[in-house]
Image (cartoon, rainbow, N blue to C red):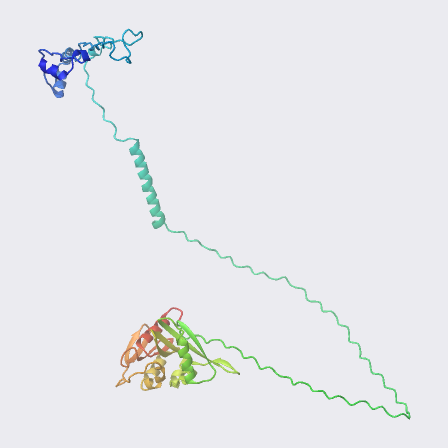
Length: 410
């Protein structure tokens, strides 16, 4: 064992390293656990303390190893540490403990349980309470609070009575002075001289007074029977069907919407008058034959149309007051209705169905009758309500016009 220690030490004592480890000798070692120590301390505290004090480690003083003196001349730049006054020297440690801690009895301290609540937890709890209270207040403010209605009190306007004005003072006009009477001419004195003959008057020509023609009053546009999407005004210099159809085609080309309901008003403009044609006059100008008893039941009527894509379908709309009478007259008219309304099929002709039989249904408060020829894009539909009588030439047109008539305020 000593040989091994020398080998592990490596250097000789001349280099400042011990050459061999101290020999422990015959020593007794024993092991024990903390639970065994606590049990022995409880049973016999005095003997346990003495045993611990007798086996106190590091009680024997071991002096430090002295540094070997280096030979002179080894390092001329290294300062010698011997015989230097004021130099710190090794001091031996006392053997006994001055504080006498070994005499104190053995004590076992049980750590107290620390409180789990600290300042950080309190701050987080306060922040959480503030957030919950703020969220509750916001929910009440935005969802549960009943807004207070502002009551506006209208103060009646006070009528200012004008102060009585004094009666105007009319100045007294002086009486007119009498016109002076012409003085009588003196009688001519007879002379022997020849009489003076005045010159003959010069004839003048005056220009004839030209009376300006009376100004033609601009008429107001008739009120609409049903308020539609577009209003088209057509001016005619003379009442001709071909001219009317040409004007209608020109105005239709200006409409850019894909679907639109249109109302036409026909205005006759000549050198002597300007006026709008009635619905009956427009129907006669187009060549339509509407029964006289049905015309009397309509207070106003007008020409209408419906645009779907690039095609137009035409019809009539009238304002009525007796639905039952109009319905009876229209049912009686169905025998010749298709022939009488043939001029309404301007852009697309129809195929006459055989036999001509109308079908019946209702739409909202309208009583409706129809016949397809043969497809529903070309048909003859009429409908009557308590306020309106409508004639259309396609299935899509009749429903578009009836929807306009059902809107509030129509």
